[in-house]
Image (cartoon, rainbow, N blue to C red; front, top):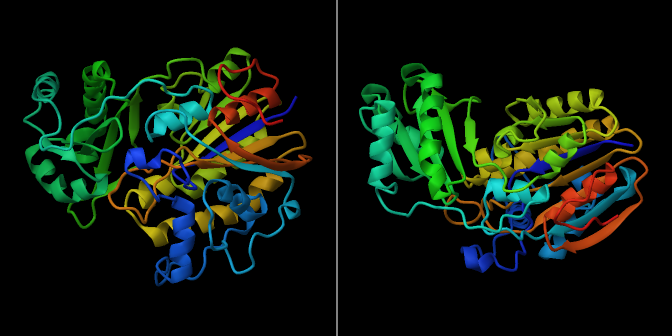
Length: 411
């Protein structure tokens, strides 16, 4: 028996989704467009980074070769090209298409773990106000609120800058949504109170669940003025659970150790998620991952989401920041390679795209990379997988777990 590690680079899509135009995302290609932007100088920022995108370790695992299954890159990741994957360790490389409807976080994660979303999520319209009056009136009454601010589609950081000061004076929490199936509530940790925010989100979840809204998200922040308002690590998601057993459920039912790092517990509504390890920021998430690998039992499964790609750079359409985050993530990988034991299988993938060169602030419908590696793995190309669920099915087979309902293993 051996172990598995599933790493989700949140939003690092590789373009090429055949149905992208249906979502308004024709031409979206998160990785490819970052490569092109960096090659042209649009990914430069003084004091941060400059020049072509350099991802030597991901390239050695086959990232560029994988991406070209979905969408021709036209430019290499660095002046030296792809590099030699065998210089790291054996790897399989390819891309996967999403079968689920939508381009949201839960759908992507659930499908990766064997449960494509075949139903339609509920969404809120692009109007002001965007939430039904009956919903907001009931929420105000249940939580004894003086009212609400926002009530529109917005970027989380922008709306806090816009309305945070008024919120602190009035006591009215800020409510907003996005193109995802989500109801978000921002409130100041000190003046409003963190537990009060959580209680409000729990009440909102009971009101939105019948509308098939995937998540209610608590977005606490601190600071005393728009110039220094900052969201904290105390985010909490209240989520509808997956409609069927996921890879995590199957592993837990088989008595395997499951460790969920970062926001994984919230995404899966804490079902089958085992031990929860909280960490904020990519360096802390990698440290938590390495610590988990140092103690993970034979037959165990660890899953981690690196959220900053999406939260800090994709939604903010920050090309230079996104490129820098990719390069820093890549630089952390040698320590991960060294932590893997013979027989381990690690897979790096993504849950959707969030092209920082695209208009708007929403996720983008894209294929995702699939890089599967470990000591002793022979590897090779696995082409275009027709569902993200092939990832979960491959892990289930590797761990000797019962076959999942969806997906096809490539080994």
